[in-house]
Length: 230
Image (cartoon, rainbow, N blue to C red; front, side, top):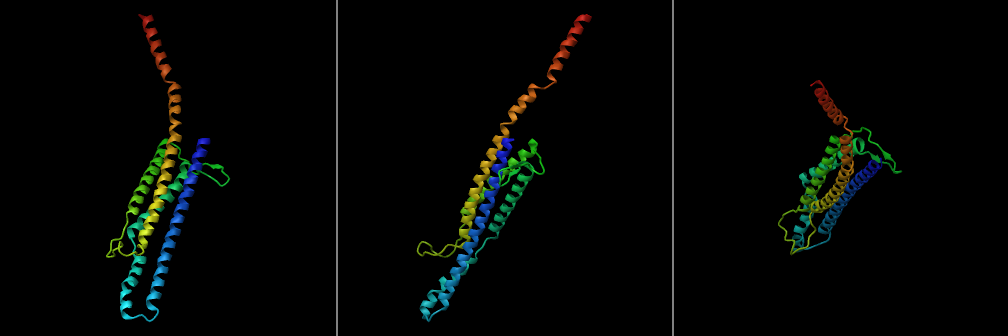
């Protein structure tokens, strides 16, 4: 009972931190997009306002044109991976809470799974899914961390804002790395919790196997009868 409650509490914390991490990532992505839209508006106002001569006007044209590109450059593949990862996290959290582990409410009371499947096969499949998901998050973190946009600008000579998609990829990389460590810790706790129960159960079942003694007694009885008849 105490192990189940502790495991459910850990899973509830994992689910809650997953939700908080995704909400923070979404909030930071919204803030990044708002920042680049603000820079684009400021640049448009500076470019269109005032009586500037043609040379200065043409010299600022390249900088004026780059801000919409910095803000609007996107990646459909990155959006798909982030959305798919979020859906997997939701499915895994709901399945673990309602069918395998259970969860803990705000008062700290353990609530058993609504649709319990606590046989070893289902628990092993759930633990394997958690491990695979943790590795998927680690892989996503490495890939997101290496996303860069190659263009004609020489960023060593000129300090220009990076692309918005690069900053969003960095946010997603940090989020995936944090969640990967979180799910890896839970997978270890799940393994240790059920691995500590199995040896005692196996030894108990082997020691109390009723089939061992009757076989020996029947053999001795049969041998005794054979000696008497001869």
